[in-house]
Image (cartoon, rainbow, N blue to C red; front, side, top):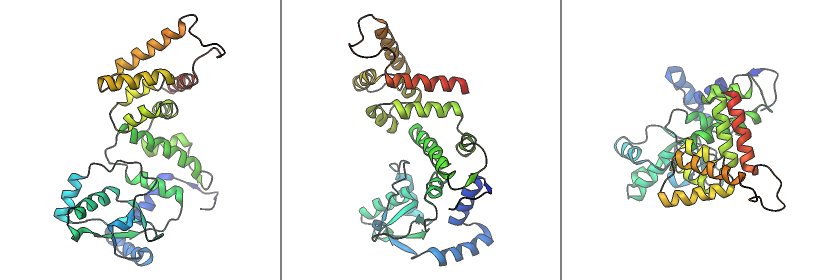
Length: 285
């Protein structure tokens, strides 16, 4: 997409792309007919020739209800996919439908194997990724999914600004698009930048709540490791556990002679970054 002096509204841009993908009403039906003739290479595809988008970070694990609905009513909406490449098409919208259909076929219900598709040529990779997020705007999400959604949206908006002139500041666009407040954005960044991989996996699996995770992200690597051990022992972590670990670390730092020889004075790098993020949060609150 070439740069332009015209100011664009991000929501309007994505609304337009959504209308292109799924036109509604009498006029939309005519548009859909033209769209299908112009862009749809086939009306159906083998479910095993459709692969997930590498950009999809939303959970696709719980599809039991969807699977039952498809078995009773069939596929009510075509899967939106990309152009064919090496015999495969990537899914833009319909990841959970794909998984539910594959489970049905694996159970021997071959009638579901060939599914209706709509092929959408890639026009702009950034807008396509934002469209994926936009299409998932009203689904239930875990706290980890919300964090990824916000941080990826911010990065994509920054990249999109290099190609088009968008109305408003990046933070204002982000707030309008995701409903996120600046203080919460600061918390997300502190978690993303400082949380150790083991705790991040538990957060991603929705096993630890965001309040606890945010507290843990302010700990050094050593004390986050202790948090992992405590999590395994107790099969969970509470906000009290996180705050107790934080007090232990602060107390240890105040004991003379605890600093290792050769290390500079001051807070551990991860904790310092967390502290800076917390200060930014407080300023924005």
